[in-house]
Image 1: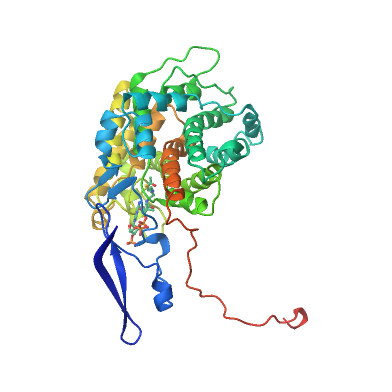
Image 2 (image 1 turned 180 degrees about the vertical axis):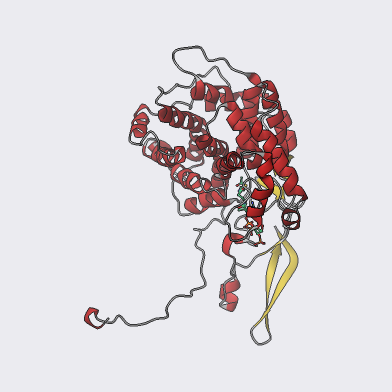
Length: 431
Ligand code: ACO
């Protein structure tokens, strides 16, 4: 939204240029510098987007200083308390929470899209059994565009809606198939009488030889993991999805791009890296030595699950995740879980250490999510796939918002060129 405010840039020999200042509903104002190059012949320089808003969005809001996360204006705490994952999906996609009728229809539609084309099964056999599950996910999700030609017209709102349903419904099936393939177990087909999270748990853990018994506490914990990871404004993978989509690429291809970006240990791969780190530390007596390594700039060791580009306070999702961790471990009689106790001890040491305090480094969502997932029986290598499953709705909501935005342009950043200036090719015999 425009305001009467202007930002003035003084440059060159006494020149000055005005730029409009835009205000959102909450959060920092932004200087609209789209005309900067035209007016001054200069670009801005902002590697890693430290101070750059790349889109107008109405979906998610974060106040990193206060530790606040809102989906469509609702706090993550209230949503995690009062809603299930599919209600949150409806909210992210449509802007409002569903009423009972809308909820029923939405759940019914998602449920009826959970099966994947039977030929997609063959993709899995092309991968080694020991392939990293995220490698399989990038390939198989990208391949969906080869199966669902009838919903690829991105300018058709109905097609965008069908693709959103297909993605939200089929990703759990694909994640579970990825796991089953790695285990050498048969795929378990979805069942329409189960809830979204129940269905996923069954596809992951049921085997044909026996009846699968559902534990409601664990199902609820999974549902909460999904809610907490559903969206997070313009993070690395979401902006990757937007960037890929800005060229007009189809939504399945864009999701594959998002999954690839999420895989990195600085982003969604942190939950896997965090659990591996806890295993490596092994024992509370080793914490001081580990913290010393983290503080040594030459060591390249990071305290995984700590720190965040936006949160300079406790990540609200980490608080909820720690609560869920307690619930799950109590339910399973694992009050004394070695890694959970170690994580709590490590968190306490870090939160009192000057290095972390002065840099405002707090636990992020990944610090506890690995412990919960491990307790649910999900293997470490699958952790980031669960994140991808949850984030799919955020990616597709943000993608659809971008495609429908009249201000959308192909994302084409510029650069500060520091390479060789123009020169002539020297003939081969003279080089
Ligand atoms: N351990 C040790 N030091 C850290 C950590 C950490 N986890 N995170 C940041 N720092 C230090 C940096 O070394 C830097 O120190 P300096 O000022 O002395 O150079 C300072 O804190 C600022 O950190 P930056 O790297 O500049 O912060 P940035 O915003 O670029 O990075 C990131 C954020 C990538 C999340 C970083 O904190 C990190 O690598 N954390 C560990 C990985 C992780 O948990 N990722 C999950 C993020 S949440 C998510 O994706 C769901």
